[in-house]
Image: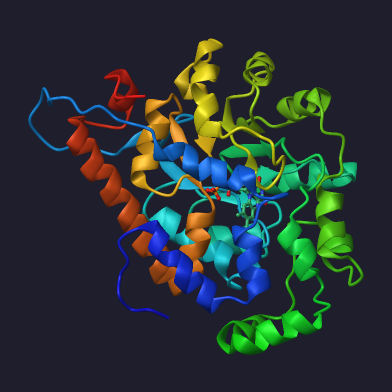
Length: 380
Ligand SMILES: Cc1cc2nc3c(=O)[nH]c(=O)nc-3n(C[C@H](O)[C@H](O)[C@H](O)COP(=O)(O)O)c2cc1C
């Protein structure tokens, strides 16, 4: 593990690749099909321009941000990341703990490998709770009860996953749970003894948020599990039902159609995350950053709009604000940091993003994140 701090989120990628067996690195990095959506997400941020203004006030800038009635120290959070026990056995609680330390939201994936109770204990605050629509109805109500019992302030329903995307790297690597290691994966595990010892000491990867029948079934492959967790009837009726049952804030993640967002708003949904799942689902999906202005044109307010997919820097977060999303999430960047340098790596990444946000706000002559769109900083 490297001891020196890094200065950009991209610096973590090469050490993450070195530290992880190929099948684990590919699980983070990969997308669906030929991965054009993954590339397009990142490239779409490249040519965005921001216009600086002369500042009208004296004094400090602040990154404080309010979303869904909740106050945070910055306008971004940690996206839900399932199966990250493959990267580090304590991945979920490390990410939750560091997010809490920096006072930004952490979204626990229903497919986390540590229980929500363990995560709440590590972080000291309840996470936002993400769920797919499982094909067993009882699972859905059990997950909702679990989220409510743990005082999760926001439920995030992922709507871009009626089935798991075709992730070719995972298919080629034979990524399966429980491990049925093929020859190539055994060689990879041997080439990464630190990862392997850590993983062996932690025991088998489990999915503690799901019922025992699911998490303890030794014959279930990862693909089976994902298929069970995502195989439910994903339609507006189920969203209406969830809205009736779930009393706290409700968010739909993976919305790319402004018409869907308008419909969600009519049903009482509190916000949407414009997302293509980091290019892991529909490979032909547009980059969310390019869609955000179209959501505004459809009459939606920026408070209703959050965004993820392709964000790798504080500057990208400011570009998202400039294009109309009031809050952003990052996924892969946190996992690269974790794989590169554990908890310290994640803290290092938070420091980088916060510094990038702060420096760029000052360079733009703005007082706070809300000013990015209020002062019209988007430069095409
Ligand atoms: C390894 C990995 C696991 C993920 N697991 C989930 C999940 O369980 N639920 C979900 O809604 N999205 C999941 N996502 C998608 C992220 O929440 C997020 O939408 C995406 O990572 C954003 O793109 P970015 O990685 O370019 O930042 C996952 C993404 C990655 C990379």
